[in-house]
Image 1 (tube, rainbow, N blue to C red):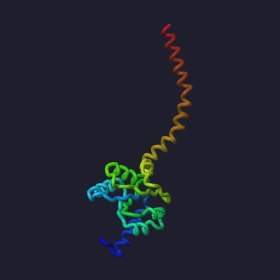
Image 2: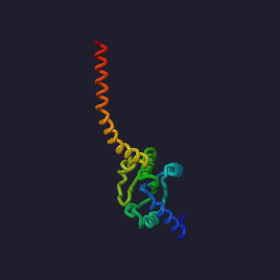
Image 3: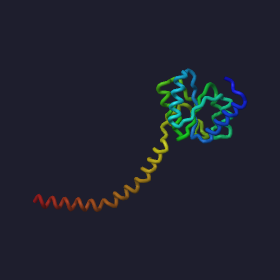
Image 4: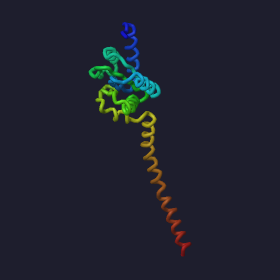
Length: 175
């Protein structure tokens, strides 16, 4: 179905707005997928905080101009599906990685993290990026480790003294 000029402008404005707020973009070729498979992918995307859109490549190029993802313009060829991560950088990559496991017709062409374009083969590396909550937990663990070690070091002489006294007591009771 052909779009008129106003509809094209609306699509470009919508994609530009989403791209400006996105953490990453994944471009995937969807050739060969059925409408049922696409509907299932869209449903998973809605639940996972991923904006999924099939856009004509010329409109996508216009929409990505002036954003951090303008570097994707060279990759936009063929029937592509754009997945924008809205929650964390790896959410779109995780969604497509999980979908590709059961549907081999979906082929990831490129991934963009800011102004860096990665090949589709890097999907697993991007998908393995921690979520925001996981990153905070890792950071808190790293921050907590030196304090825990300090407390154990400070407490070590006291515990050693208590163990020595207990050993002497046990030795006297046995004798």
